[in-house]
Amino acid sequence: MNQVASELSTEKVSKLLLKQSVPAAIGILVMSINMIVDTIFVGQWIGVLAIAAITVVLPIGFLISSIGMAIGIGGSSVISLALGADNVEKAKKVFGNQISLTTLTSVILVAICLIFEEAVLKLFGANGNILEPAIPYFRIIIIGVPFLAYAMMGNPIIRALGKPTYAMVALILPAIANIILDIVFIKVFGWGMFGAGLATSIAYAVCGLFILGFLLSKKSSLQIRFNQLKLNKAIVSEISSLGSITLVRQGTISVLTIILNYSLYKYGNESSVAVFGIINRLMMFIFFPVFGIVQGFLPIAGYNYGANLYDRVKEVLNTANKYGTILCIFIFAAVYFFNYEMTTVFTNDEQLLKQTPNAILTTLLATPFIAFQLVGASYFQAVGKAKPALILTLLRQSIFLIPFILILPIFYGLDGIWFSFPISDLLATIVTYFFVRKEIALLKN
Image (tube, rainbow, N blue to C red; front, side):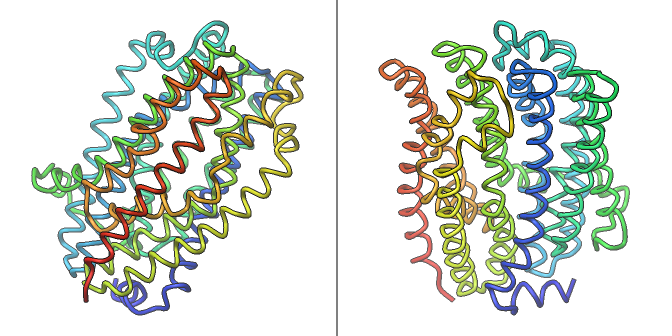
């Protein structure tokens, strides 16, 4: 732990950010490739409705597992601050409480989803012909969601411990498993949507078990005793305070998904839902280096803030913004010139090939400017300031985006939905800039 502390507090910031970000980015890349390949396989081997079904089902699983993510990110911020203050015992207690919270909440929610499956699917937009392929996919994938919750809970902790390579491996293993099993179950065995769901569910289990195994081993420095699994009111409150940011964000994404799927179906059809499914997978893929920077930024900012090294906090914030913006400019250039080629990877359906390229370009118009919003919102979470982090998180996905999706299509139809995204991104970035500028002015060593 002393070596990790030394690196986080003394190593050159640009080098440290690179060391933390690259493994995180690779892990996110592999995970996004995994989801893209999943969508490609069902799109090419099953059909357009299969893409729409995945677009509806996956947000349900991610909403449940996002509780694990919220517990993980909230707890990892507490752990980073505790380690910065050299309080290892508190860090262990936090980890034990994270395991118990994740187990309890994910199992209860999965049971509810299985009991009310059709109602849940329709709520998330399984309209028209989408429901039929969504049901077999949903039934099998939901069983693997608790393992995904463990994975999303544990991954931020691994990074907080200064072990980004293990966090990367934890994402690579299930991705490889999913891709191989997709080919076997869908193409070879012909199991259709059930096969796609089974492959993904097994991949979740691989990821969750690997992460739990690492965190409970001697390599993690967080070996816990059985009594540390007992929920502690003060620790749960601290985790919840910071984790609620992530939970609200993911909950808002789910509300957004519901509204978006209904709007796409209303102003378009099942194919329009599939179009967004392609865009959503593509966004996860092309933004992987930026997300990697954000993930690498979190433990560095959190540790140095906890150690009162504010100059390093400012430096890592500026460095992350600079690198993130450069990457976003390159990403937008790729989208501008190759949006049609990107679409052909997912489908050869004539209607999707006609709709999707322009929708991709429109949706991502604000890409060159969003790094600052992503890093800025994450900064407040990293340093344990829940209120501004929550506000900035809600800006794009709730305060701006949802109203625009509801209003603009009334006047501009389907195009209004696509233009809602860049408008929300720009407005959120502007507000984030003023929040961060005010906060940095208050930091003094």
